[in-house]
Length: 83
Image (cartoon, rainbow, N blue to C red; front, top):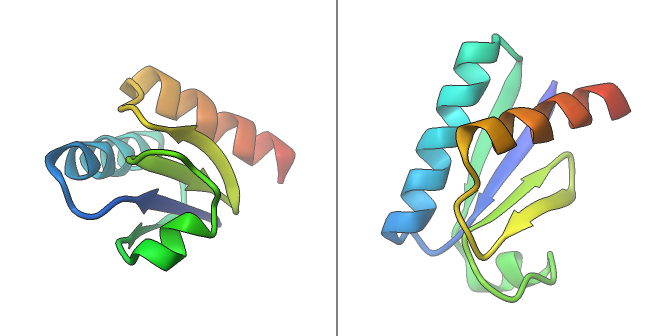
């Protein structure tokens, strides 16, 4: 099972990234836990310069922008292959 974290304070961009991520996981039928990380110290632990951030299995795959659903799909596929 994948652990996917959406890093952000809860702004509109962070919510959009969470929605895209949940949609992709659902469409792919992948078993994954999607977690929102909203506390500043927890976000900074991933050493990203700006939010929203996307972390899959503790690897930062995107930060500072909203990736497209196709990009999120690629991130998930790569994580599954690496597992």
